[in-house]
Length: 158
Image (tube, rainbow, N blue to C red; front, side):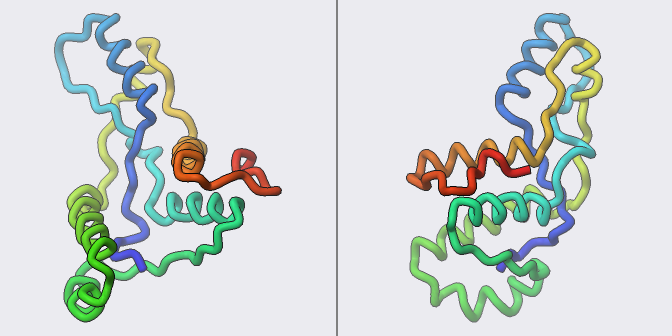
């Protein structure tokens, strides 16, 4: 169960793209204005990001169900007070921390502004496909946490 709106945008930019954008600004001696290094309107929706992760997990042979989305206020009023205390302390802390962080980050439901197209015109690297970037991040996490490749190579997911 995920206490978030599935349509909320999840804006992330790979670290190498951020570094390249900053280098581009320095090289072009940009000294005025605001530059937003975000995915902007190319950001995935939360449900799209979750679908990528579920697909990746299944390709690794991990049994995973697609989570159910519930409105955040329903979680706060009905689900959390009844079930949160029943969770093991470590999981409960993670749920509360995730809820606090992501609610603050995602709850506006608005797409963040982006200056990446403007920076690309100055020579910066363009934002790669968001689904593939997420797959790459999940693949890295999986390798670091001992999840091996199976007969269906998650690297080839499209």
